[in-house]
Image (cartoon, rainbow, N blue to C red; front, side):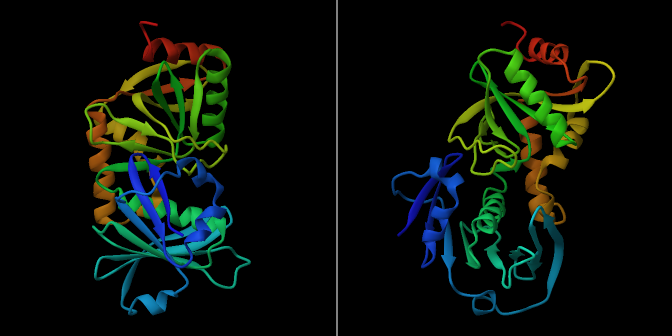
Length: 289
């Protein structure tokens, strides 16, 4: 039975003889909607990679070693991307095939929930290339505006997120380490997604983006604005590294970031893990409240 999901305004149909496997990925439940004309289609099939594609020379873009998932991401000469992933204890992989520029993606093989969630994340990231990007970050919502927290360390992000929720009444967590930025508007939006790495926070909401903050530990609290090149450098490490070595996908990522930065400020916050750091950020982003 086909399933339909609305993620960041994109209507997705999950179909195929193994479509029911999506129901075991619980994070997708908040995004399920009534059937309609899909923008993207995911085909979940029992067929193997060799049954679907003729083997040909490929270029390895990225070796994957993410938590309990290993694999590789390659691009064939005919603009088809292949993702092959598995857990160390598995005897066969889950694979993904996607042709650049298409609105459909084929997934087959071992449909374990954790592998399928990762593969769907990769598929969605490729499908939305040029229109939006998926980024690893935490997002706080206050006064119906979103603030993105980036950091080199998950601990720094988590600490500041908890401090913000503790000291700023009315603030809420939209997502933790996985969200989508839409670029097709003069007001970029942050959207919740089925991919939230650290906290099971899966909300089907889109919130106007007020600003992006890169956090770093320091012995003081200081905040300053980053300009275009600095801002791009601050954001890029939080984008999917699995796409970084591909010319087309990385170009789409950089174009989207540049478009967003025309409308959204990016700050660097050198901070201690204390309330003063939260207040400094609060008065900078929301000076009139």
